[in-house]
Amino acid sequence: IYAILGVDFFQSRGENGAELFGTFTISLFTMFQLTTFDGWASGLAEPIFSESVFITPEEHAEAGTSPECDGDTRVLPDTFVILFFISFIVIVVWTLLPVVVAVLLDNFIESATQSKRRAKLLREKANAPMPDPLDPLLQALTNWETNHDLSHRILALYSSLDPDASNAIDYQQFLEGLKKLHFQPTIHLTEEDCERITERHKLCNPDKTISPGQFEIIMRLQVRQFIQRRLAEALLKHEDDDDAAILSVFKHMVLQLDALNSRIETLAKLVNKETFRKVQTQLEDSISSQEEKQPVIEEHPDEQLKEPVRGVCALCDDSRAPYFCVVCSCDLCSLCCSAHQKQTATRSHKLRMGLRNGSGSRRSSSTNNSNTDEG
Image (cartoon, rainbow, N blue to C red; front, side, top):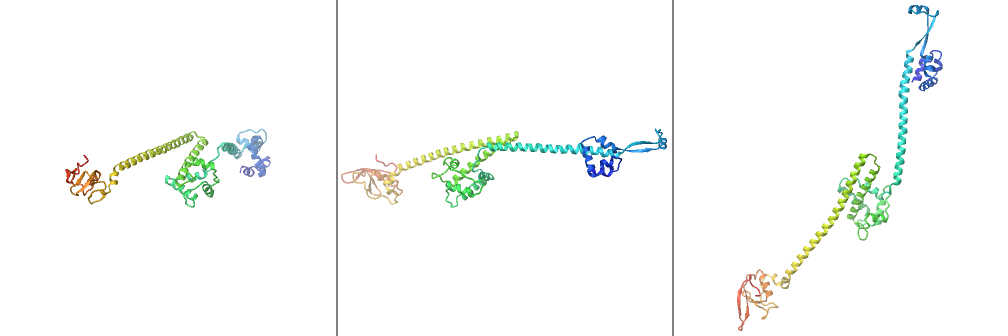
């Protein structure tokens, strides 16, 4: 812009006007020379800074000055030239050039910072441990919203790994099912990885197959470990002290929750064992008490009958029947007497106890069912 203005206004000014601003190219080079302050006052500004004016003796007389000769030539400054050069120096030299230099320096510093950051990331990646082969799968599972949602995701994953719905998958089915899910990178598990995931086959069946419930336990454990690994990595990479402190607190809370969960599981196992032991003891005591009361009922099924016992039982004869029922007119041994009293129909009968005499009759004493026994 200033080069165009210089061509328009200073091309025909004085003897040096055409030399400095004759064409656009010459004017542009002149303005570039002005930005370097390379003799701009004496070589650029002064040749066009003023305009020579001839003053006649009459003009001197009117002005009250005395000319040195018949005529005098004076140099008068041009205000537009002053504004032109001063504005160019203020706007271009003092403002635009520092801005350009600042932008260049900022880009250089940013480029150097990015180079250092990339080098640091490369070093951390080189020194970082190998990622877990299940990380792509666990990354997808960590987007759950509720506990029920996580269980639903895990069971849906198990259904995709068990197409025949046998509720039991082995190592080969597990590996082939994960390959069909098309994760990036591809999940490849070795037998050592399966042993680590199942805690040396403690979390699976004796035949090394995994049921849906066992699969959910395994995946929940892996998700918790994945979150702990991600938290530790974020803590190592973060440079801000405040954020690092917050992440440290989160990590400590996760570890405490993990320890608390382990204690709860251990306590639950002990409580279950103690409860089972108590229930088993109570069952054994109940069975023992029932066995003690059962023989009389088992040996004398007649007590289940509604009709009273009539006649002499198999064990009751003349020598082994010390009791006699008045209502039923039958001889009863001690066992039959107890069964006779337990029945509802014969509970109110009167029993007599005594030995037979010579006429075949009994010398007996009458008794009721409340105090009848063998002596």
